Image 1: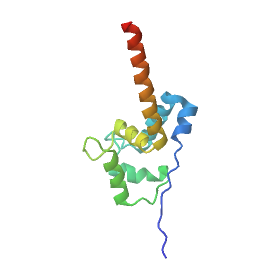
Image 2: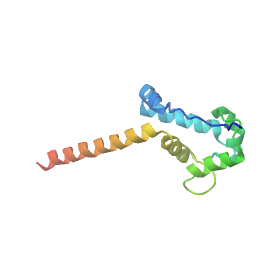
Image 3: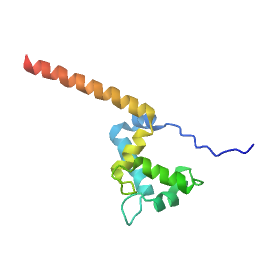
Image 4: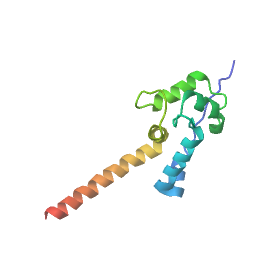
Length: 121
């Protein structure tokens, strides 16, 4: 039987957020974007992602897989990833951060509601 290359994604993002704080983590995501960006166009293109995929440990990524990654994160349909789209995609790839963000949102809403109740009374 032939073996398939399987990419195993280990979610280091929660540990990074804990260590760096939210602002430091976002700076690291921005640095990651800069590593992959097409310097002339200012976005991550098929060519720049394919060329720099080894930096992600994905040097044997097929063209189809590169296109799939771009499609997954391309929110405005231009075929490339700007910095906001890249950061959004990276956060979406972290199930734990997505779960924590939901909890943080609920907490913020409850705090806001409590503050409103204090102001009303």
